[in-house]
Image (cartoon, rainbow, N blue to C red; front, side, top):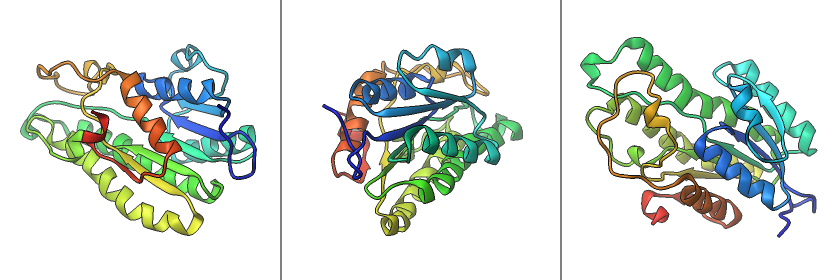
Length: 229
């Protein structure tokens, strides 16, 4: 099925973190249905390896100028912008007393400020009927010891989305906060600090991507952890 925007054209989709386990799974679903993709990630080699037709932008979205440039690239490539998915994220483990200030700053810069900056840049460019997705995760519903700072950075995104959804209504853009349970993206194996505790096997990126893309296609404004089965 070919997805179309309100203009009758294929949707223009920007996936930030498009080379990651979840971002690439989401990108594959959009590409399979004829959407026009722009993928953004820091690692050019990993970005090039995503098996979809897309415009690829190598950028560090922690830099506000790079955020604006990525949105502009998506608008130019897709002749507009209909969907923005933020799948950027980092994690750190360990008690707060042991966590470095550098790690705390990285958590909030990447997990909290990037979504805010991306929304600020994207909303004025999005067409009516568009959807903006942030993935705050199950940790935003109940924080855990050993992950307190990480959980706080994600809970801030959930709170941001709650208010952003009201602001975005003026532009007829839907904001979707997704809170999937632990997902086997490999992120836990690459913490900025600390070591992951033993965790039960999580959902696959494909399982989570299916729910998120269905939510984008539908009319839901929230995807709590229980929505992922």
